[in-house]
Image 1: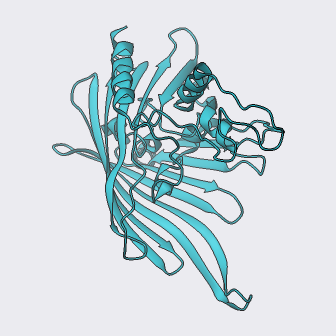
Image 2: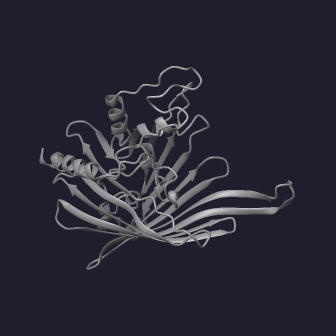
Image 3: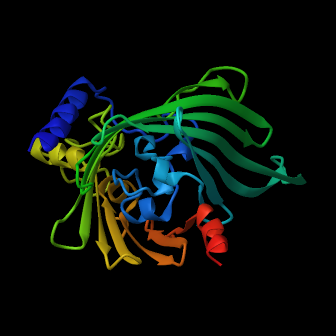
Length: 355
């Protein structure tokens, strides 16, 4: 029980010290840094994962999981987002005896083409927009049970005629049980500064966040569950509509809009929790699913909630290749498709030497 008590204690302290302002959307620049970088992460709730199984695609979201088993591994991920928007990642791992293990990541998001026009409708041509980041991750296993890691990020954003440059770091630590069935992680993300603002004026904050998570693979069943705690730096994530605040009167129906203290507490608590599961059907196939309560509350349409907030996917191993696919329901407008491919380049040289 000690390992669970540590997570609960850290969570309580962080919540106690947190800023009590609500909402996090629109508070910071470079929000693309928080988008899921792999199909596996997207299928299990769309956030980071605390799973120690040498998956290179988890290194960007949780650098304390970087290990020497990722040496010479390559990971590629592509997301068919909404309309003409798409984004992707390319990751490569390398281990050095004295310095530790590193994972380099190139990421981009392309917002598509836009028509430039003035207020009269006169068109002048087209322009594009995109965000980019180069990430260098480092990880080291301090003991068989404890590991640490960090990411350094160089960020560039190009939006029409406006450009911005920034730098950020992530720091993380993980506890891994002796049998590797249980993992617990704590991470502080996007600690940094916008060096060059878009308009050459006021500097904007980065999307800083503190997260914690655990995963447990069951001893006698081929199943692993994951529980994540997000935005530990801020307790109140509820949105209060200024035209229809809780405790007031609905402007359309005239009915009282009453929310009890217990309801507010439960709603806020669930907004910090992301749950996921992975059914391991042998060594070559897995089914995955997840639920993100805050995403559902913020993006659902009340008259037709559907599966907003839910996600699913699968992973399959074919020879030396690991292929993952996921769909994550953000809104009734559609669900993005995530495709990830990972493999180790050393496996190809081994096959050649065996011939």
